[in-house]
Image 1 (tube, rainbow, N blue to C red):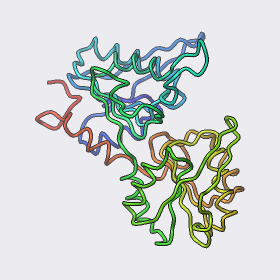
Image 2: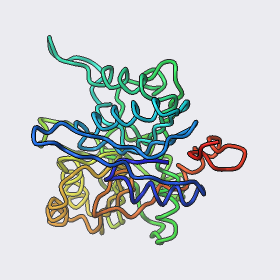
Image 3: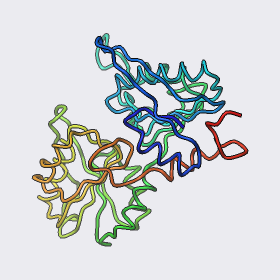
Length: 301
């Protein structure tokens, strides 16, 4: 297994769990911001771990790393991207606008033989395999890992699981089912990148109960804050939040606290101070079939 530098901690831990070698890819920036990429020893099958938050420089590094690995003998390249960038825009909303999902889909399809991600931020795309035609692609759910962590930490059985919008219903209902809790989703009206209006069809059902907010991705924090304020107005006793991808600045945590959110926990899909939910087990399960007969992918035969 090899990884980009900012994913090295999570990648090395996963490699250890799988019992395979690990190498951190070296990056060097020249004064003009061009990048030199140096990979470790190649192998017939290489797992490349790269979480693609803050993606623009990483995509160039990924492109160069794949070139070096292929040229050195890698025949099967598995891209493990716990956070997969540029997935949300799947149509052009105005003339001349690029469709980022299509462009990144074509780029990554040309690099990898298999792509594994988790809770990709898709809208009208129902099957991630359509983004990467001709190769294997899997969009894993983080809900089993989140449920395991929450179960160990203990939850009030009166807790209600809340999703911020209709789009969140599949993972909110999944998580609530795993935990044996009731759930609902809010109605969201977005007026801009940082202006969101939240309402509930039955706010009385949240009164005098703990609330657990669940979202797949938080970047500006506007939706989380609006939800927390709406829950407080409905009479929720406490508000905690769990998210798959924490893309927001760490300094925003104080704004969450001010809005009444008691705790924010995220998965390790993106390195962040709120990380509290490891994804190692779901990734290890997905990667088991890449192990060779000796259980050691990434080692030259």
